[in-house]
Length: 385
Ligand SMILES: [Zn+2]
Image (cartoon, rainbow, N blue to C red; front, side):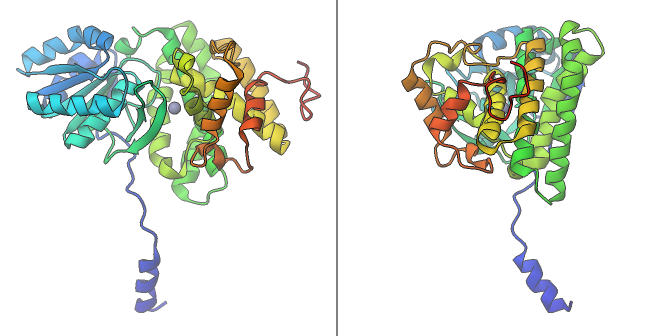
């Protein structure tokens, strides 16, 4: 190949999106927050601390010694009612009036999503301090935007991952166990979704991300039960690392090529039902995995999906993840509400269409009400109910 050909080929190379793989720095350990003062103060003097009302209260005793030692002048603001466009408008005003020079996000997925997007919009640094193992939001360069009534709207890719992530196991341990269980549900979805959306990819980083998702699934299947039985045992921090860090790594390496599929589409649809706001993100996603497998089984005759769903049903029973609409507290929703959720999940731009077959809202509704169905399935006859 001569030089000219090389130049032409080079020009034909597609423009890849920037790789946004990991936070610039991750500090983790027992009581690590109390030793993170210098790392936090490196970003400025006037942080705006963003979280929910409850989290802003419980984080006080952790941050106060750092504020005093490093003479920080913080302000704090709630992200509530949700990670919405109006919350962000209000918070940008607070950044301006306080003259904040960096953001500290504390809390779960929505608080951290708000803090990250706020910092991105104001072009200042962000420190994320997760207070539960419920999501990988502390890691990723992605924020989900919701409506004023907490219905999922769209996601935003940020310019970079957080500048500093502080994973303090003693802080995470104070969260209700249900949060970590939900985090396990959200993290284990990576495998079921990435293997469908990207399982046939030949791209090195995508293959790597899918294989890491498989490893993440195996770690969670092996260690979750023991971790939840004893939060002082060896397995507990490993499961927290799996849900908060490794799930984020997979999102970072896989990027746009390793997208969510039906499990998150079902979650997104459910957020449009008002009574579906009590279950946590990861609980709805966990249920959504079962719906996705049911679709693969019903519409594709996929035998592997049957055994995967059976394995997950046992796992969910062990650790307390929801298996049905009833388990999500949605046993009494109307047919029109179920139809609304299914229609939202089947909109043309929905990730559900990454499945290798067409799905109608009627078919999705049928899958949503039969996630525990084993005996009567045309491809699942051999499995006792
Ligand atoms: Zn998720």
